[in-house]
Amino acid sequence: MEPYEGFDAWQRAHEAALAIHKATRSWPTEERYALTAEIRKAARSVPTNIVEGSAKRGAVEFRRYLDISLGSIAEVGYLLRFARDLGILSEMEYNHLEDLRSQAAKLLWYLYRSLGSREIRSKKA
Image (tube, rainbow, N blue to C red; front, side, top):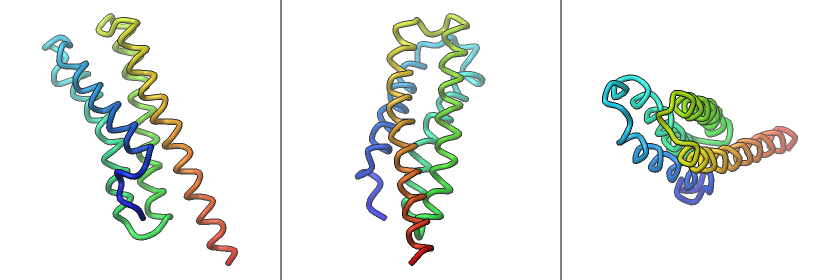
């Protein structure tokens, strides 16, 4: 596998995780150990699992870690919506963060699918 920095999915997921971390700095202190910690952890999980999976041997292992990343990025989507609906995030902040998340999710899905295609081709050979 190539170094994780070469994957567009990692680059966008990293950018989204950074933006979410920065945005949550201004969230209410009573959310520090609840919603803030939860969304930060889920956002970090996406690029972290790409890094860990890319260090494994082969597409099957990598794909397993990407599957975890896909779950985490979906969780981030819900938590952003939850924060917006609570009034913690403005509509403008939500739209910006959701756009970053959505871009990362799309690239992550493409990467996941491409590794599945490699797995199928290698089984046929």
